[in-house]
Length: 254
Length: 199
Image 1 (cartoon, each protein chain N blue to C red):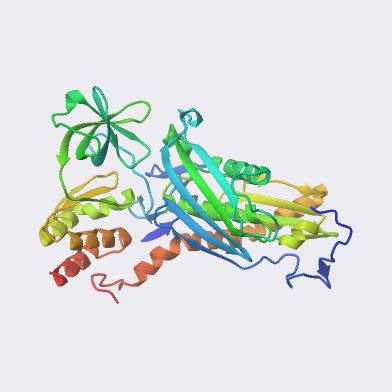
Image 2 (image 1 turned 90 degrees about the horizontal axis):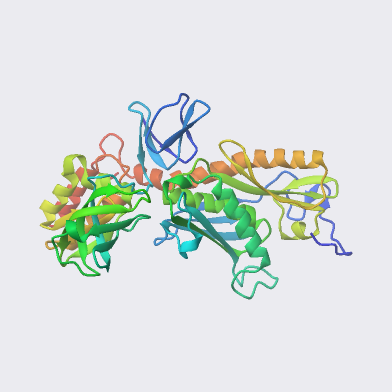
C-alpha cells in the first residue's frame, strides 16, 4: 500500500484501469512439466505475471541440522528476477520481502504435502518470478501447487492463490501492480481446493469484518475457475497423447 | 472405466483402502496424479515416487566405500547401504550395481544385498511410476525390447535402467516412448512395430 498524495483514480464508471469489473480476473494460462531436469515444474501466465516453478526432491536434507527425523522439511525460495519489474529488484539473493513470501508459501505447502512418508528428507520448491505485475505470491502458490503435483509427491489437496482488495468502498479481485500500490487494502489468500481451508491470509491496509468476508467469498468463487485451470494443465498432456491413438485399436496411431 | 485423477480428487464416497489414497470424513481421495479404475478400485500412479519394499530389484551407483559398508546412490530420498558381509563383489565408488532390497531400517535407509556389478553400458533415468509399464505383465514389455534389439537390460524399480550392447539406440528410444506413453493402451504392439520397422 502506498500513501501517495497524487493517488490515481482506480475505478472509473465501474471499470478498473484495465477495463475489468470488480469481480473479473485477468487471463490465466498454466502449463505443466516445462522443465526436463526438475522432478516437477510448471509455468503460469497470469495477466502480465510470468512465473516459473520447479520442485526437486524428496532428497537428503542438507545441511543436516535442517532435517527432521520424523518428516520431510519443505524449503521454498521465492525470487524475483532482476528484470521482473520496473522497480529495483536488481540485486540477487534473498531480501526482506522475498524471505517473507518464501516463508508464507512454505507454510501453505506444509499443510498439503504428506510429509511423514519421507523422514529426514527435504522437498525444495523454487518460484522464479520472471515478470511481475501484482499478485505474484498468489500466482506463485497456484503454479507451485501444479509443479508439486507433477513431481509425484503425495498431497492431500491442490491449493490455489488469489488476491482481493479494496478500492474506495469497492471490493475487487485480482489486483494488478498499480491497484496493489494505491488501493486501500490488499489481501492475498490461498485456499485448498478440496476442503476450502484457508492456508494463507495476509492483509496490507484496512478492511472491516464484513469486507473481509465478502473478499473471501469472491476468492472462493474465483477459485473454482483457477482450480479448473490447474487440473486441466495437469491432465492436458496425458489426454493429448491418448488422443493420438484410436480407442478401438490402440496399436496404430491415428 | 479409467479416468485421470489429480491430488485431492474424490475417488469414492465410502472409505476404501486404496494405495496412494487417503480417507477423510468417510470418503476416499487421491494423493497423486494417477489413473483410477472405478471397477477394480485400483489407482495406478502417473507421477509417483518409489517406496522401497524388501525384495525390490534396484540399480544404483556406489557413492562411497567405507570400512565395512558401501553407500549406494539410488536416485531416491532413501540412501542405500550394503554391508561388506553381504557383498561378494569388490566395489569401488562410481561402480554401477544391481542389488536387491533386503530390509528397511527405522530411518528408512534401504539395506541392500546380493549386489552384482554392471560393467560398461549406460544408465537411463526413468520416472519410477513408469517402471511397471516398462516391465509389463510378467516382464513382457522388457523381454520384447531386449529380444528385438539384442540389448541386455537391467531395470531397477527405483527408476534406473541399465542397457548394454545390441541396438542400444533403438532400445533407448523404446524406453523413452514407454515413459511418455505409459498411460495409453496397446503400447506393447506399438513398441514391437517401432522396433521391427527400424531393424
